[in-house]
Image (cartoon, rainbow, N blue to C red; front, side, top):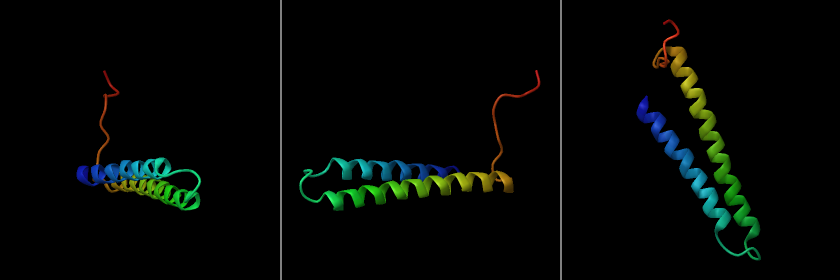
Length: 75
């Protein structure tokens, strides 16, 4: 499960980097529509991966594959 979460996180950061590269690439006079589409597609992939990762974590908790950790509530 740790590896799957790590791969999804790398994919999210990679999609965000692709959107940044699409935004910064080229001059503003030519290819503006294509650049906007590329950036929107990269951001859509990032949002989709984030939603899938969140749902995967919820499913994993519900199925008992992961357990919450943290500070104990009793002294």
